[in-house]
Length: 95
Image (cartoon, rainbow, N blue to C red; front, side, top):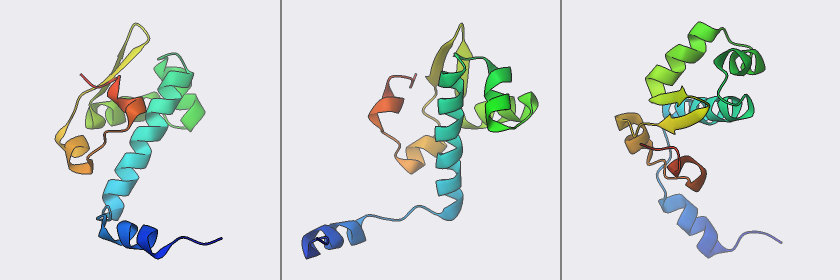
């Protein structure tokens, strides 16, 4: 029915992200998903997220995301290192 005490204790030991870090992580996930969905087309990704193309390019630069010939890659930036983002679906795009 509920979580065991061991599971709760394990969760309490994991450090929480700062709210700004959690927002960055959410931006990264949404941006990657939109770029994948659009086949790397920045204009379509911008439309999907209801952002301007310029904003998408700025976010891509901020988070070390590039897209050439429809192939997405993510530079392991200090931000990603700090967030310890090692999700399997991201790893294949890391440079």
